[in-house]
Image 1 (cartoon, rainbow, N blue to C red):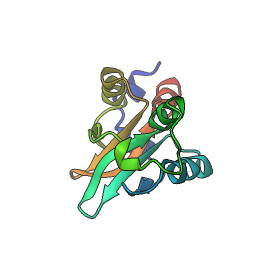
Image 2: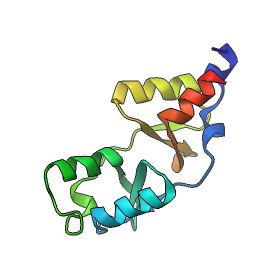
Image 3: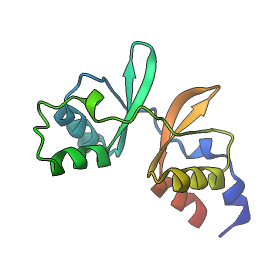
Length: 129
């Protein structure tokens, strides 16, 4: 494991803009969007900006509760806490934030605003390259 990769800024791992979903969308719509784009996390946005996140884990929990995904709303299953790191934080900082929060996706901010998402897979690739 290269010491350089561990200290590299995490912002370089963000390869595409954030994918968003509205709070009134159904879980089925959110799951379809995740599946279409191969995503594990959507940022929930309302007119004031990001208000939470919906992860694949949230959808799996709804399925395990035998809920109707075409009726259930994102707002009722998303987390209002958005765990973030700044784009200048290191890969190591991001890995630590994920481990501490026990999450697999992390929002990345620039000037205080969320601009991207990274996954544990992105962090592992950076550490192993």
